[in-house]
Image (spheres, helix red, strand yellow):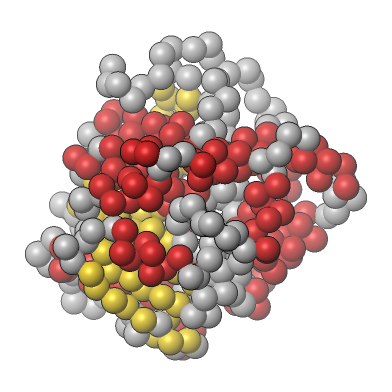
Length: 368
């Protein structure tokens, strides 16, 4: 057993049956069990054999579905897998109730150690960005490149629009919010999250909205949904207060892997102003700024993120996977997107070249 593994604990209680999790065309789901946790893994068969592995880690309230659009665009570059963190998506809660950033990072490490896929091209969004930063810092042997979309790294001045999400960390707030919103429909909740999270909620297609509502209905039937949200929010707040070598910014400085940072100008949860600090902190970084993007650019404008990742791989890995006929739009035409507090799975997905021309983006490189 590695030093990152948890000791064996009792098996989780039997969970209620819910509607099946949506699986997009070409995707597969499987469950991987460890003592104390069970992880659901979403995969997409690569376009050809021999591609390097990639692992995607979602944000607070999200799931592996948040990465479907980007995975489809990159299946000719990397062998894609996306995790449902414990308590999210189709993964049951951890037996020990540990939803800290370190606990989630431990789950990612355990999976990578067990499956032997490392080093991987590691992606993280929001909470998943903090988790992935910690994984890359403490286990550099597992990470080939790091791509962070609006990572939840500590901010001295939190945006006012992010305060309600942070308040979930306080004891009793999740239960209070549940009572206050008990008469809200799933569609009302989804539209509220879209307004908070997307740079342009109008980019969500009718099918995307329908899928998001169905997923919200499924999640609201899970007895642990709000507990997982509240404890994970508390985990982010706790991680923000850590100092010394365990502080997330200190760990960002320790990351050795070439890093792509993606920040959205309309992000209401992670401050756009943090982009330059992040670019200075990661020693081998490049920055993609998308002025009209929200919190999850990989969902609203996946083409811009895909193209920037292709360039990262071509530069950092000697051209591996940077093939002709790329699926993404040029990175100089950016876009934005977001899942936000409830992690909407139903974005517009691949929007095509015309959608990717809506906004200007900026890329900067910084090499140590």
